[in-house]
Image 1 (cartoon, rainbow over the protein chains, first blue to last red):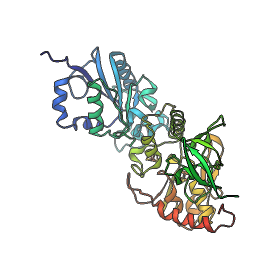
Image 2 (cartoon, protein in one colour; image 1 turned 90 degrees about the vertical axis):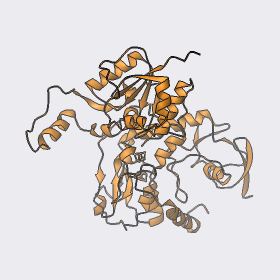
Image 3 (cartoon, each protein chain N blue to C red; image 1 turned 45 degrees about the vertical axis):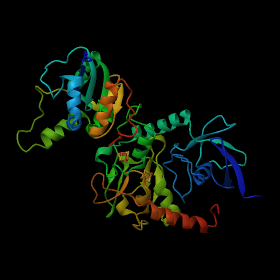
Image 4 (cartoon, protein in one colour; image 1 turned 180 degrees about the vertical axis):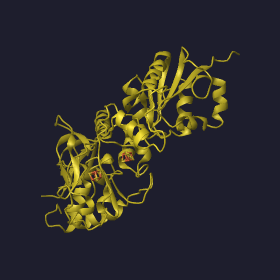
Length: 179
Length: 241
Ligand code: SF4
Ligand code: SF4
């Protein structure tokens, strides 16, 4: 008997707290089943430096807040068949959006100059430029499934991944909510 | 005139009392219609548009909380079309202000959040506005956070109709509308507020809350206010009964 080829799974971490990735790791023994059925090809959980081609399912955590976030979101979309906005930051922009009523320059000055005890100064090198606002993923790329929650429960993530791997469309009504 | 009327709700013939709204008639017959601005015992305003229904022979949707049930009426309370409109209404509420459920005092005890889940809203198709809004902490016991307000006006009505203090009103127009205290002063400076807390308890979201609660901790006690509001309903000579 030949085994079905493993699905190629990628994750990405934009402007979020990593809680959604923690919740993914929280699926307990499902991790063992997943290990048999998927290969994780990109994301904070693995070493890959560049986003690969032909990814089957991509989970994106976090709002789109910087130029780097925007580029990574676009790269993920270009190379993935099915893109999931994972968690409230990706779905609604959530906590990162609380900066949105303040212009980025004023925000950075407030944090790095007014708020600094030592060495006041806005960092300009080696940091990605902030976008005017932190926005939900679907405002910049097409999203195939939204999984709300802060973070989405392990049960919700387990349900989504199992249903997708079995070729069904996940029904989130019982397992996912905002907040 | 007989006091009982017959209406058809989702195809089934049911009895209702003359003077009941479609919403009340449906509820009396154990049929669920969603509603955010409606609160038992308070007057109705039709502000939230979640309770819209289809009425046979009328070519637009009607808010069931303000439409009287009439003898012989045929009403549809659930359909794909209604679900779609109700979802749109909810999404517009989310997009209008700043609802950050994860850090909200009312997280997991919020009517707006619960309806989103119940009606299958997993994201908001409209661009969020991210308005800059005030949090007024000047009252010794309570807070009003305009970021979470859905402008249901339950607070305005409970303060006017049950407490009789007339502290709250709506200021501004359209997208600039907001709840205002007396002639737009800080709540802590209100001259008529009796500190009764009824507005806090009826508020469906985390917009009105008691002080001293962290995220997820604010659980409202609506049963007591509903009791007070319905007692008043039977005694008020201007009321419907
Ligand atoms: S009021 Fe309700 S919907 Fe709004 S942020 Fe709070 S929990 Fe979420
Ligand atoms: S403060 Fe609360 S009760 Fe008053 S209008 Fe806003 S959401 Fe409704």
